[in-house]
Image (cartoon, rainbow, N blue to C red; front, side, top):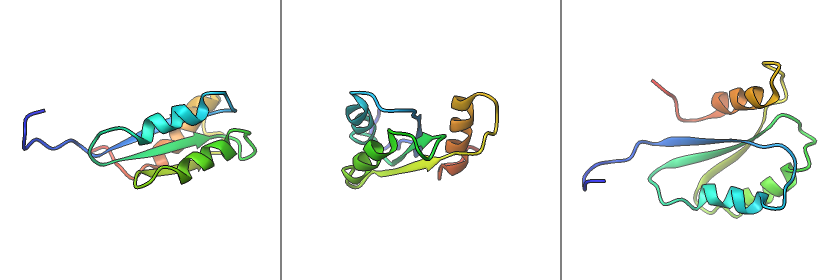
Length: 97
């Protein structure tokens, strides 16, 4: 990128479900990026999801990166992943114009 050019502020939306062996590393890959200003939103559709505790631990290790957990329990649409993404979009601080 040419000097003097600024990067746009972005929201990274990551829908999650369950616990897999690489979850911690996958989450870490989002908040260790070399980028300007950004936020990371980790979304679940079930407040009892087994992956939430591991995701919560990862947010504590994120340092200065803005990273939040979002629980989108309302079924907005019949597809759970789409519902999760809709909840993440609504929670994002970055707005599209």
